[in-house]
Length: 241
Image 1: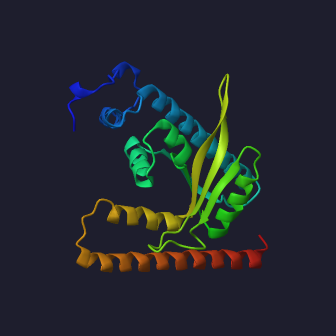
Image 2: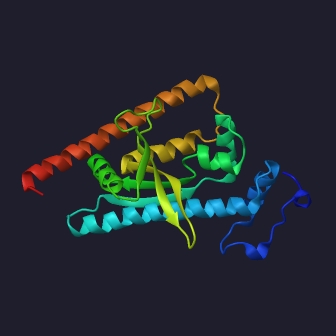
Image 3: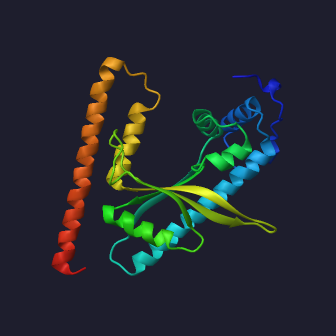
């Protein structure tokens, strides 16, 4: 870690939003300085991504409210949003072989803003997807269905990259947002898999067995999802609801 005295952009503590973690802010400043990214334009860009994520989150909350009013169950369990850290953004640009610049960030990284929607059942995911994409100010860019086609690791989720406009006083701009849609079981597995793998220095001799166990647990999670879906469908047939 470089000394704070080496910063080329000073930290103005009075300008930090309430609740800002100073350690995180210093880390962000280090990353921006190391790669020559200007602070103010970067923060403005992050505010745009945050605004876009808030808009997408609001759309799902509205759908949740409307669907709950017309049905016995709410298809959405939880909604989470996040903005990629400067570290993650720069790492992804490097992996992709892109220039480290704000222009590359906007043009080449589509998941800076992220919204995760956790649903109860598999068919809720596809129903919400259709309702969400039907909205006039949402444009689908890419769609990856890891539920129908899971990753080799066992990861399952529906990923949508969309564009949505944000509007300020004198301008309008389309911003990318990644939407991940999962069941509770999918999210449970993905969260624990990340904790078990993340930054773990696992002996290569043991890694194969760990991978097998994670894949087996993913398969068990998928069977549980399907079984719960089948039970729900049976109840609907019996009750007509």
